Image 1 (cartoon, helix red, strand yellow):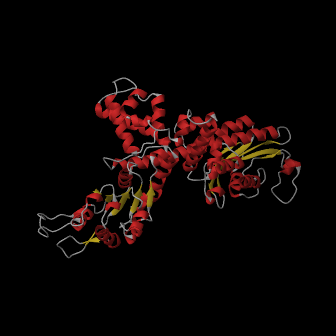
Image 2: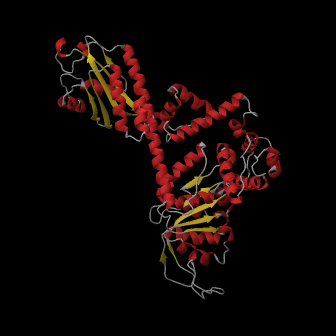
Image 3: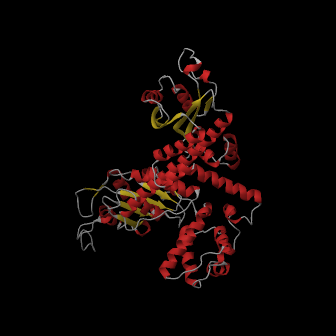
Length: 517
């Protein structure tokens, strides 16, 4: 293990680390011969030897890679171990036949240990280790097999973590490289299951959707202050459109009379007050992203104007007859219930049908209190830099009180509160309960948010607090492993039966596909 960790810790590659660990294990086992093979393809299995101990010939090594019979080693045992994913011990040399005939004792006087190294995160066999020595004088025993099983499991966990960490770092590098192209790339902060899922689905589904020419419109739904504008800027900043314009429109300010002109532009003199040519929002955002905020506030007439351009991807400026093609990614947002608006007749059903299929639902902060401590620290530091004032941060009591608050204005409300805390704080002092009460008295005028139980403990029974914690932990772990129930179960160190019992008791659904993984 030390050899393995040293190689990985010194920026060695995975193969070099496995070779170093295998060499040390072979010495520990007193192996006369042995080899380690990487499993490169899953179906059909393709093996590649990366390290050999002892006097195995090239012919013997190639036979092991190909699964072909050869004297002196047992390729069939290696194939069997890969298929079963369990280590095997051959203590009696007479059981080592790879051919139909029964070999003599002189032909196969050796004992073998063979084990798979599995990545528990991805649930795949990474490699196979094969140790062999004299079956007459130094035959391996059951305790050797037990040690090998633990060794292989530990190596698999280390590599599983290593590959997961590599993947995380690669994704971070990609995000940073994309952000470097933008001067104002936003961050989506939080470690709740909802926020992890949001970041994942944005990069997996919605950002790639913007890469197309004339992409489908994207709808962002959420209460006021949940960060709909932040998500829209995030989509722009991390997409291939980041070098093109990001145009923001508050639809509540668009009147019937000026809707066509504001959206599509106008020619000079086309109406009273049209003193110059104007491109309009769609042409201004050509090649980039047009963010239509408060879309539920548009009049029926303005909705009709927008419906046409969403379907045809062409605009006709006021005072002009020639149509102009535009390539714009349209992102819409609202805090209204659009189904209700359609029923009330304030939203056209055909307009709603045009953009409702790609929808992002943002959860209010009271439903994801696990994000509150991280957001509080982020905005505290931001306002300390802005006001050139340092504090000692939040006391534990203040942090618990703020985590218990339901934040009706969501993240926008929290950011404003942090500005007040820093402005009124004494330089070099902590932000305590007294300061919270002075700046945000309403946070003490209601009962604690029950969803914040695991962050509070004091106001929940031990049983209820643990259930809240366990449910959030299961959700977060499923998100970390891309929804794979098996990987989440193994990362938590639970048996399959126990893991699925927890899912059922805590009301967590992993999905039929993930149940099988």
